[in-house]
Structure formats: C-alpha cells, structure tokens
Image 1: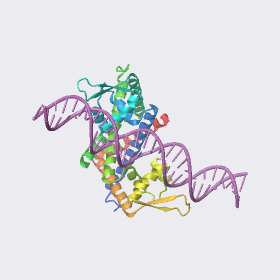
Image 2: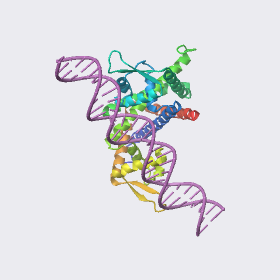
Image 3: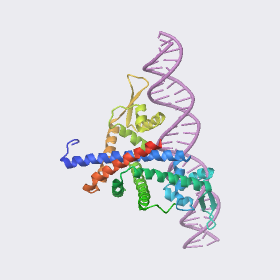
Image 4: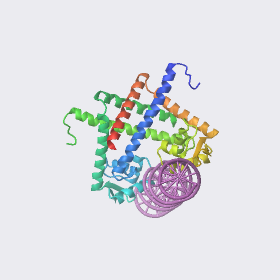
Length: 159
Length: 159
DNA sequence: TAAATCTTGTTCATAGTGTTAACAATAATA
DNA sequence: TATTATTGTTAACACTATGAACAAGATTTA
C-alpha cells in the first residue's frame, strides 16, 4: 500500500507532489537567506526593513495602519518604531485631527535608505529574471500565478 | 530616468521583475501561514516539527547532526530536544562508542506523530498539484526548477 | 604514556519576533 | 454627561536563534 500504486498515473502524481514539496522548500529557504542577507547589509532587523518598505506608497502611517499591513499586533509595531526612531530613519508627529494618533514618516536618511533597499530588491529580481531565457520568462510567471491560485484554494479548504 | 524606458523591452523586464517579486512574496507568505497552521494543529512549535521530520530518513540523530540539518547552532538543538523530550516524542541514549555523544530517536508516539505530519504535508502538496490542470503540472514543476536555478546563480553572486 | 588539542553537548547572556492582557488618553455616541 | 470604542503603550510571556564559556570525553603528538 505504500510503494505499490494502482497505476502509473497515481504513481506520477505522488512523485510530482513530492517534487513540488522539495522545490518549494528550496525556494523558500533561498528567499529566507536573502531576507537575512539584506537586513544585515542595510544594518536593520528584518522587521525594521519590512516596515520601511511600507512607506514606499504612503507618506504617513499610523501604528494601527502599520500593524495591519505587517499583520502583527500594535504592541509589536510600537517596538519596531522604537528601533527605527533610534536609528533616526523615521519621525513621528501627533495627528492634529486626533490626539490619540501618531503619524510616522521617513526622515531624509530614512527615505534614502528605503530607496536603496528598494533598488537592491529590484536589482535582485531583475537578475532573477535575466537568468531565465527570454522565452521562459512568461511561462515561469504564469506558473507562479497558477501555483498561487492553487495555494489559495488549498488554504481556503484548511480554514 | 525613472519612468521613461529606452524601449518596450526594457519596460517589459521591469514589469516582469516586479510581477515576479510580488508573486514570490505572496507564495512565501502563504507557505509561512501553512507552517504556523500545521505546527498549531500538531501541538508543536515550528522548530520541533521541523526537527521531527528529520527522523523520516534516519533512526538515530545526534545534536551535531540535527544542528547541521536544521542549520542552527548546537545550543539551539539542545533546547529543541528538551521540548521534544518533555513531550515524550523522542528519547535519547548515550552512544556506546563515544560517551560525549547522545543518540536521539523517536518514541512510539513520536513515530506516530511524525507519520501523521508527513501524511498531512503530502496531502497538502497533493491537493496543490491536483488543483492544477493535468497539462499544467509539468510546466509548473519545470518553471520552479528554472526559478530555483536562477536563485542559486543570484545567491552565488551575492556571497 | 602524558600533555596538548579537538569534539560534543550544555548553560548562560543576549537579541529578535511575536502575542495577549491591562491600561491611560482621547474620541464618538447615546 | 455617561458610556462605549479606539489608539497606542507597557509588561509578562513564548519562541527562535546566536555566540562564548565550559566540562567531559576522545584523539593526536611529542
């Protein structure tokens, strides 16, 4: 029952599923290494780096807003911002319309660093793409879209 | 210089690289959620779960061996094994050939749990595959292989 | 063989990520 | 105005992880 399959089709699926598992694991491992590498390179903790990148689209962010985007508790955000304030990469002002709220924004050096990080990440992904043969690029992207969709379906079943 | 590209080819590459970045990010996020879900499901910490799966291929493992496979410090392994010993999922004996060495192995309940976890992961990946159209499966796997290779090249340049 | 060196695993201090609960200040609502 | 809801902080806790110092045991070498 463990090694004998009803037919070749079933055996192929088991093989492919195992292969899929190994490939995903390797790819994730590689990405995690990159995250550590780049936070080390920019003298930030991974959480600080992730947080800085949120300011790419928005000039002002609140603790609540950051917590939602990073999907962590507000108390965690307080800690992360403490680090970024110490490093003088962000500054905070009180929201003139609501005294409970703090508005965080990048300092000049924070803006510079954020832009450097974003360029670095862009460059990495550019290389990632350029290492693929031009005719493979579209199909790799399409495959990742299929995989993402399938993951969403599996996830929906799980919860 | 930021929004004007020399030609359509360059613009396409920038677009594709950004798309690649977003897709990888989403996929990784999904996988991380799965890791949390499954460790919660099996009443283990993620590190304990990862460690249990190492016994799939080998009956006996040492602290050093586990540290190498998990790519963590030996002191970390000591802690993880403490948790697994408390949960009675592993047992340890002194290596008769070297008094410094401890040989860890799964208990009966550890073996059972490990097998349940492995089946769960197999099932997840099976579903992941089955949600793809049969004619897409090979190309998705092939694309992941291409991506993995490209990542290795990029990584090699980085270090 | 005895001394020096290497290996194995543990403990401890430290850092980073993250949660929940309790709380104070402020805002919105009834 | 009194109640309720929101915002952000603090504190206690858990998990992941590292590196240094160390003890015990194995190996090498002089």
